[in-house]
Length: 428
Ligand code: GCU
Image (cartoon, rainbow, N blue to C red; front, side, top):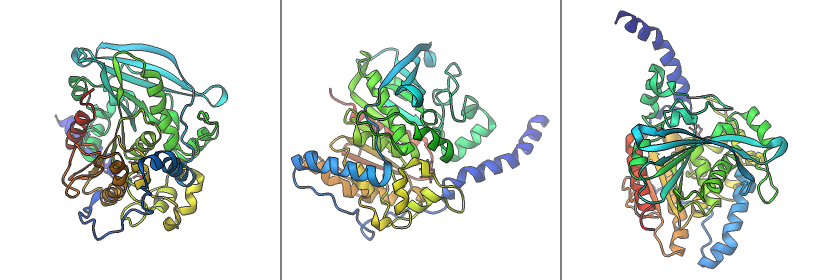
């Protein structure tokens, strides 16, 4: 008992340090996002909504080209992916609720080929071919599935099992929420959903220098272009998972959703905007260069995300080098983030937000959703259809969710994800 108390006291300064480091990337969350949207700038340039045919044939490629040229660099669809090896890790995962497998995947060939591990849990008692959710995470698979039998990551810092079990892990979860490192696996499996996950840092390391080194030799997509930013390159993990899992008879290739939080939420939006096999996307707190508009914004600016700020460094490796031309000139951007959301129509989008996560700008994400909604209208559907930022409507094409609190993944978020997925996966 005394020892435990002493240990706790010794750990306090460490906890303090972690709190400073942790909050430095979320900017403390001391303010509240404004719920007023009518008095702020609308998304611009407005979408050109001439007709559905015009949208599909002319506008979609034009908007994709602008997003690639100004922000994300080439999105590498169609990189050749193969399964190097595959093993059943646990036949009775979570007390027999599912089967847990691990696939070693290789993207591309030769010098720049990239290997990463995809962990896949399928429901033991299928209710039919299982809808599939594919997650891209900060944490390696061991932490996400809370299963020590999965392999440690080949690159990047592991969250490991200790992330969820240690005192430090508990503290981390206190700041960023219970589900920051782990997936809600029981919820998924009990609903008959399969869940696959990859650790983004295995594909491109999440650091400016190491990230650029991998990007410089990264495999090219089917059109021969290499990605020049990590957000687009990470999306290749979703594409490869879909390529390699779509013919698995246990899975329903018509019901594929992708998930990502924060930087990975940016990548999830990009993946869904380019790959129409994705039927639903959960992009949680994706913020700047994600769901939030780059113009008229509180919180993180384009300059911050590229060049850093008083609390920390920027993330230039996430984007095409061309993005830096707009760091101090957002008005010069030929496009804004509502276009990224619009490209997903008529498929389903969940935008998750926290009221105190002003850094990621929940208000700007709502205005982006408003600006994107016309694309759903072309298909005769609702885009955003809710009465303000607090009124979650899981049925609409864009379901905007706002809960109290800051940057992280808490139970209320998971409940919104599940409600959204239920609608996304219904019918068939
Ligand atoms: C930083 C960054 C955000 C990003 C976030 C995250 O806060 O500024 O743009 O979304 O990290 O990925 O957690």
